[in-house]
Image (tube, rainbow, N blue to C red; front, top):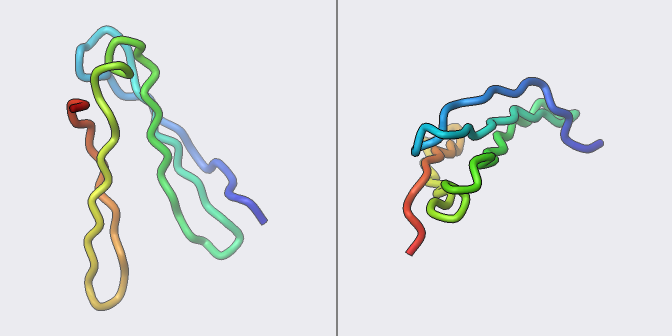
Length: 70
């Protein structure tokens, strides 16, 4: 009953010299989760993933973005 990878896409990283991956996962109850992975070593040292949560009366949403590490 774990999460299964449904699809994966590669996007250019912020410096343009590498990529980051977004994996789309789903469990047995159709719950969907995104997993973001920075593949670029330069950006991996400079940026971290920020997650923002938003809710409406029916569901909770997650928004992801890369931000500079402090």
